[in-house]
Every structure is written in structure tokens, then in C-alpha cells.
Length: 221
Image (cartoon, rainbow, N blue to C red; front, side, top):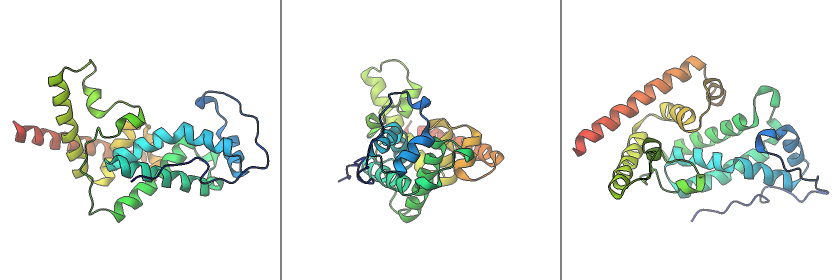
């Protein structure tokens, strides 16, 4: 059973809370939010979790294909983020990129530990929690008929199977670019590789994914 993540689980009660200012996430001064978190301001930590949790969960789910594992990993990511707040340097990159890097590193570690336990659940499983379009929904924009819904569910299973067979290096590059919408420079920061290598992995990953999907399509015809 997946553990519930509490925004206060990794914090201590602050001596005093700074007044909360309601602004849009893009307008947040995350350096100040990070500083407040390090000072023990639980409201600042709750704000960080609330803003970034869906993105972290989405990345964990897309990488593992399992909703319960994604929830547990999301909790682990935020515990790791909290314990490493002091290493965030706004001069070296944005907070979302730093959080994505932390998430990716934890996912790779988890992948290495569980490489013999590959997830087999549907790629659509748990997508509502992320409140984002499912992969199949990107291909079918209009409201689906029952036949279209069945076909879309079958496509989702094929995508999940294909993703599981793509190498982890190419898979993470494709996920970060096509599903997390990071640009090449940001992906290079996250993966710690040159932009040219990022582009190569994305190109090869897309080609491999398309090849696997085409082969699966032929096998079911």
C-alpha cells in the first residue's frame, strides 16, 4: 500500500511563519522559498510541494508505469529534496530543473535496484492524479466513442510495453523531452551530458519506440 506523503513529514515546526503571499507559481521567487524552507517554515515547504508534486509524480509514473511505486517514489524524492535544499544554486539553473535532476537520479537508482522487477501495469493507470493528458489522448483529441476508447486503451498497453523495452538512457531522454517538455539545454543539465548526446538519444529513442510500436501493431493484425 502506497504511503501517503505529508508536507510536514520532512519539516520541523518553525519559530514563526512568514506571511503567505498568493502569487502564481511562475512568479514565485524560489530562492526565497528555499531559504524559508531551510529556516523551518512549513508553509513554504507546503507551497513547494503543492507546486511541484504533480510534475514529480508524473515523471515517476512515466518512468515506472506503476501508480503505487510512483507515489512511494514521489515521497522519497521530496524527502531527498528537503535534505538537500542547501545544495540548490539558482545561478546554476532553475528550481524545476534542479528538482527534475534530483528526481531523475533517484529514479535511476531505483531502476538499478529493481531492474529484475519490471512494471506491467497500464500506462493510463493513475494518470488522473497527474491531471495531464494520457499518451493516447495526445493522439485522439476529440471525445472518444466506445470503439475509440477500446482502441486507445489497447494503444496505451502497446506504448507501455514498448517503453519498457527501450533502454533506460533513451527512455529518460524521450520522457523528459516529449512528456516533461524540457528543452535540450535543460535535459543536458538533468542528465549531465552534452546537448548533442541529448538530441542523439531522443532521436534514437523515438525511432526505437516507433519501431517497437509498428512491430506490435503488425503482430496484433
